[in-house]
Length: 217
Length: 272
Image 1 (cartoon, each protein chain N blue to C red):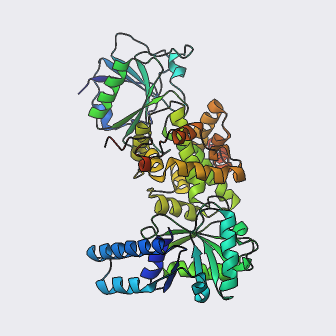
Image 2 (image 1 turned 90 degrees about the vertical axis):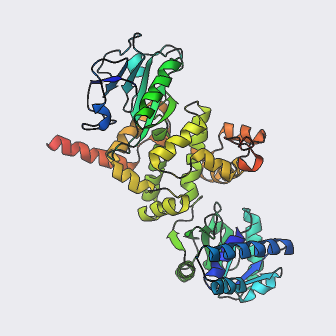
Image 3 (image 1 turned 180 degrees about the vertical axis):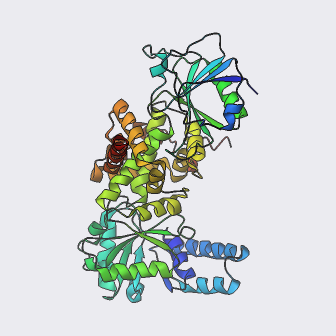
């Protein structure tokens, strides 16, 4: 088991308060995990084996800076996938840059796997793997709902029974929170310009209403 | 796929006329039916008597005229609009006025298939999922001229056959393929963009979303050439960029990497 220390820079979506992973941390270790982003500080420290920065919707380059496609060091990004407000899953998306240190990647994989997580490695691209792939589908499903293609129940049942998914797109995106879907989708849209990420009308409505509630507090 | 649909109908107690232009096709389907029902008995899904009754419900024919007595004709020929329209026009001359025509198309418009067949009000979409004999879901759609009575009768048939119908508009890909085909293209584009390997994408989707099969595994099973055909059916109609065939998909097909059927796709099956 690798030793790791944790720097809590803000609220963590990957390891919320009380998560078992937090209890395994040491005071000072060769692997440093920044939760809730990097706290606005460049996290680099070549003396460490690996430095892991928890990402939300932003790219790792926001924390490390970029260098014409040559960027990369012992600083890696990561996020434990969760569907909006659902509990975090067992999946860690580990984010690398073009010149990331292979030893740091191996160390990070070993660390998370030893803690019981499934780890995948992805490039520092908007949405990483899952959000990049599912957000356009949720936007399409929400648009289909508006256009009357089928009811929400019919779409969800089709995906469960026809594709063997554990849940359908409408029930899943609503459970995770349409406002959260709006935020993730909008962030990817702003980085890619692909219209499929432009938040669907129902997500915009939910986000507007959530904002109005916050303003009223 | 017609053979699987016939199993569903026969199992539910309907006398099922299986029409094919080739005797060999019918013989192969009959063997498959016997194997499937035998296994169903072995697994305790049906009794030997029920198996015998289901098999007796299957009647093979190469004579289109034999379909004259049918109340419902479900076509499951290949996805070509002209061929489907020609078949329905022929059937209109053969079948009685009560007969409802259903198309198992997954990509074509029901309204266009029905157009000019002579009974546009009695044509419905009835898209079974593969393998039909195991999957309960049916996407049901009505063309612009489909009557409420014909749709209701077709819907009632699917329920009587023990299936689960869902209603969808007559739009390209209905629900299932309208969501799946662009999603799979997004996966291929992510691989092409170097976001992650096929194995890591599959692992992420299975672990994070709980899917039983990763999208690359599914694409290899469907066949990458089939994915191109689906794209070519959708994109010209929808002009949705997500529905257009990604360049990597075309290159893989050109390289003979069609998926499981060619031994290699996103994964290498010859090494396994």
